[in-house]
Image (tube, rainbow, N blue to C red; front, top):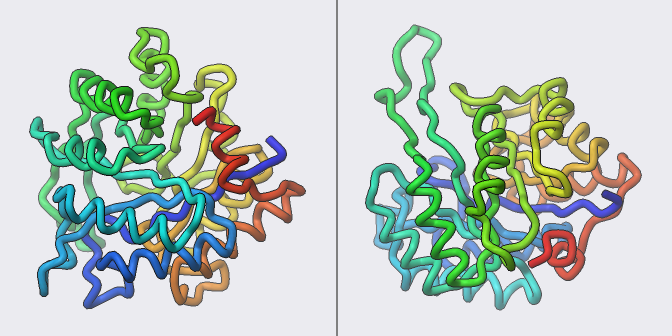
Amino acid sequence: MDKAILTCALTGVLTNPKQHPVPVTPAQMASEARDAFNAGASIMHVHLRMQEEGLGHMPSWDPDVAEQVVAAIRDACPGVIINLTTGVIGKDISGPLACIRRVKPEIAACNAGSLNYLKLKDDGQWAWPPMVFDNPVNKVQQFLDVMAECGTHPEFECFDVGIVRCVSMFLKAGMLKPGMGRAEYNLVMGVASGMPVDADLLELLPRWMAPQSVWQTTLIGRSEIWPVHQRTAELGGMLRTGLEDTFYLPSGERASGNGALIAELAVCVKRAGRSIASPSEARTLLNL
């Protein structure tokens, strides 16, 4: 595709704002979103944090918080597309569903398969207790049903090759209802127990996707992510970055914020001979 959609992942799940400069409050989220929007991002991927003093490192599923954050971002970035996170462990998904119903985002993440979510330290000890990020088919269907109810387009989050193949089965089984937009795969690379950040792998994955679909990469890491961002741009994919995914610019310097990271994605796009999609062009490409 000639046009490349840029998505900014503004903050993330558990990053402590006392240790890293991630936005938490509606005003902070809006400020970071505006910088990313001005640098070329037409979509903002939004995680929500607790607003109480000292709890900004913890996720929130309070619909009031969702409404305040999303309203602030929309005010700061006229025409922006909101992509709301939904990732939650366990069967109780009432929080994310309530947030979708409250803010009716144009896009929401739909985690498309389960993963052993692991990380090992250099000394052989687990970085956190081994856990399963559980996304069975019935849970995926619950999310898709509410997204259909709210006019929300699902972005299928794929952490491994088998999950990419699952999405094609979801589509064939009719789980994506008419009117929910074009099939979209988000290839998440860099989780230690998922797909690695690897340009060679990236070249193979589109053959396992549904025809006429759109795909994007989410690359987690440091300097190793930037050549793969470049390859994404060259292969016709859509691009995402932000303080959720990395703190580092291609030079190895720490990014001053989300705007600086999105500006580097824009360089990748232009170097590949493509142009950056405006919000209205992104809506057309995704059939929102």
